[in-house]
Length: 340
Ligand code: TXA
Ligand code: MG
Figure 1 (tube, rainbow, N blue to C red):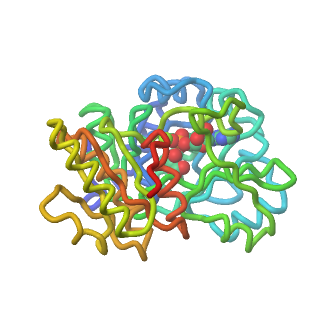
Figure 2 (tube, helix red, strand yellow):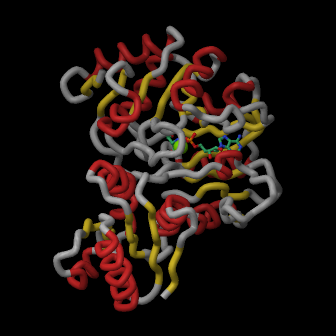
């Protein structure tokens, strides 16, 4: 059931907190995507998340806290971690640190734990009212795009799940994940807090290009080895200068139409004009990649709902959050990237 936070904020936060305290699972909003939360200190409650989501047991969960001291009780903070938390929390940054005692069910047996303080009043109120840290993955069934609206969560899990509704998420892509346990911290998943922003604070930060299908080595973040963010439609990313991209997409689109497929173009506002009467949805302006970040998952989900079989996505510049957008869409495309 969906509990609105517009009319009965306090009452509904309290209902959800009761559910958490009782060992249940609640979907809740954050600034990035909706999470599927349970009491992080309760092994059985955490197991319920894995079961509901269909998530492999070797993929750890992020622990959500309402303050830095609470995070410091859950994990061992180094100096650089303190600097990043002071600078970016509450916000879309997950710090991977040595675990202090959260159950192995949360960390998938690793000796580290990912913690973050979300920048969302409803999430912070829920954590505070529950009185415990909340373990939560994104509130989608394993493999499908993360939910940025309560309707997305309900679509994946049905009417029975309690969902706190605070409308659409403001960022729209999952948090940046950074492993702080290494001499040079390593970004495991790019997000709204960019590598440049992190470097400005703590000097060096490495980035490891996430798992791609032909990589053999063990990924540092277990989440990387799973196909992610993917709609049912076959996604192709097309990269190059505006005109060549539009030409290539039109060619591929028209070929699909002849075959009887139902293609869709995901284009920037600036480029839409090239596509005439073809089916196009807009990802925002190429100059404002946060627009693409906010609408990306919703558009992928809508494309499935509308029965599209193929999606052609115009690559956007990898600046700012554009880097994270390109990371997610490349994975959704299973690295099917056409360079023109
Ligand atoms: O924005 C977000 O981070 C959202 C909201 C709900 O907070 N959560 C989210 O959780 O995206 P999830 O479970 O879908 O993604 C967590 C990612 C996974 O790739 C996981 O492998 C990685 O973080 N992760 C979690 N704990 C880790 C750890 N101890 N070491 C390495 N990677 C870890
Ligand atoms: Mg996820």
